[in-house]
Image (cartoon, rainbow over all chains, first blue to last red; front, side):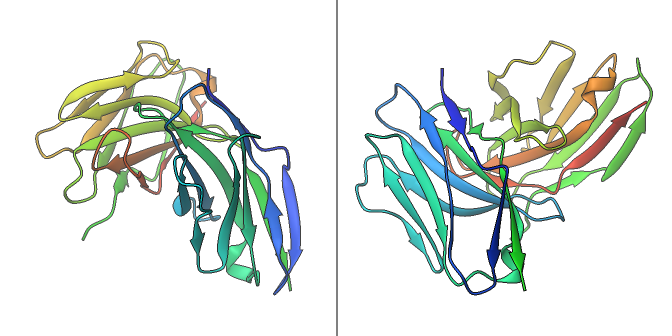
Length: 113
Length: 112
């Protein structure tokens, strides 16, 4: 069975500071994709960043980057220069060549002015 | 390019009733997935439709059923509603069964 675990229910960060959200996963597949999605209070889920398992290089999208540790099955999200608009629920998700996305339970990020 | 839309936004039903939720996929997307998101939880996969056929199903009972139409829009039907069905129902469309998913804003279902 595939699982995704987010062990931080809530995190806080000061505006302009850096925060890291943790995610661990388990899969027996060799080929899979990992994602971080953001769900603001308005509810619409937005893709933040994706990582292909076969790529060793960590994905980066502007202020968002990941630390992908394949052997440890760890996929953390780093948000640099945090902004008030970054406040949201963040979900880590896994898919491995089937139809199914497995989501974690989410981390609520609060950004303090 | 039109994004994923869902209707209605909110819905209140009573236990035992039936409900239909609707989703219009993003232009060009032939795959639609449905998720149930209980309060404070991550989305749980219900099923996926690819080119009008069910392509996979999560651990949901048969009273959760769906359809996909030739224009790739989709419906989620839930029969014999239970209190635990109260949740946010999310629809996501993609170009392929495991492609990047684009989510709609969701339908908030409350069962009394």
